[in-house]
Image 1: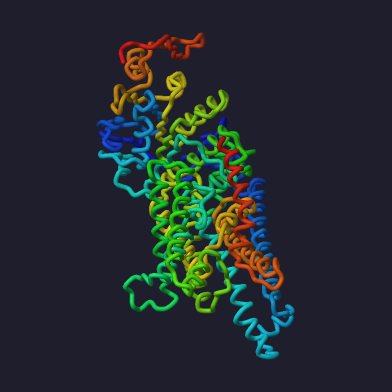
Image 2: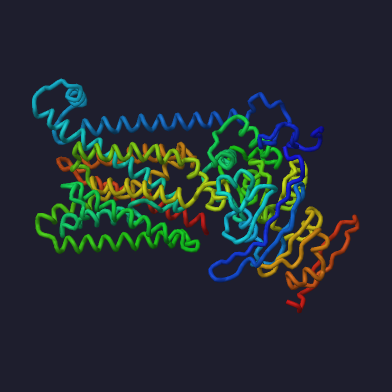
Length: 376
Length: 263
């Protein structure tokens, strides 16, 4: 049994563990390739740590800026319990902190939703905003405000009706997208076109409701069409945080399967991945994230699209690092947008959604143009 | 270790796409371990569908047995332990390193990365002569290089049954030759059952043991490859007038002279 000619002739007597390859060299020492691979993993962990650091800097900057002139030390003193007068406490605990936290949570939720959508729909242009999930959620939310439509669930009260409505329409839109994506091998372009159709349809419906709405309700509605974190309250943050804390580990558990799915559906299925189940679970997660983000912060443009692309360039597409990366980048973008929203026009706080849209559109065009070049 | 030779017995398999009958009671016959079987036929004859059906990716009526294991009744994760399938489409140009895709293909079933898995992946890459591609991203590789990586993904899983759909389609001459030689070597060394969809009939004649020839979803010939690839068979399956000659070194060569009127 001398493996003379080949580099990977098997050792048939080595027991039935199923892995038949043995290296020609001594199999106990660590090869250069393995070292290189480990170095690569460490580099990714360092990049993730770097993103966390950037996120913290953004968060602190966001906290220390605003119409009321408070220095970072004032803010930190208030946070740590040092009470130097009622006004500061109110500003920090009721305005600065919830807004800053909500910005990061919304960005993180949209980043994760976008990353998963791009994988399961195999489409670089997929995100809750571009394919109509956000618009659908906004319409669902509007329905709760103007005609007062709601599910017959009496135990859900007040503001949560808005969130439930947003979720119902988000999951509906997501299932429609999935249906189209699986329709006899629908091309990437078809799914995007269908998503754009959804965006326009739901935007038109929201406009219709706005037209029919009373003065007061109109004020409410306009909020959904321009995203903003200024409605953040601690209960809302708690809900989004809870949802995110459940969904993120759930996503990570599917990380291998999702990465396998990137190699093609057939390939993934032949590896033992239950593709329909993975896809459905992922759509459910995406819908919850998108719906909550919209219900609490309105339609935020392009964060869900751009964050996964940046994460992919930085970290590759191994979903164990790509998903956390998308979350961090999403949080950073939203936090930075929130900072910009406060400072672009002095004395005014712009809705964050406007900032992300203006910054996101160039990114969007770059992705589309690069995509064109790759396929032609 | 497999003490006696295992056989793949698939069929009769019948399957529909929409209302159209695409596999009509197709039988492969018993295919023994350590042999390579070619699936041959014109475009749309059902080769790829048959391969996908054996891999459990296309729903069919009929049994697929691998030795004592009823592959047809298994769920995907269990079947994946026995069977590796490489689709006709090349691995997509995604931003993941080649090495990583191989580890994923070994671990998507649930097991964790370990040194053994890494060594296996490494030796498969070396075996295919693409060690230098290990840490390159798939979106930097050419089509042929990605096809080799795809082949490495399948081989690294050490399957009992290896199903390859046109594994040579994007390869240059040298790599075609090397891949077929490597497949022959590995198939024998691991006592693996290898089934390949091939378009290169000369390659099939020289490098495979058995063949199944399909036409419009039916088997028109099966058995030893030299009994299947005959002028009559080629005329029936492809509608061509062809000869099988011997090269000056004594190897068979398929020569096509024209279109036959039979089809």
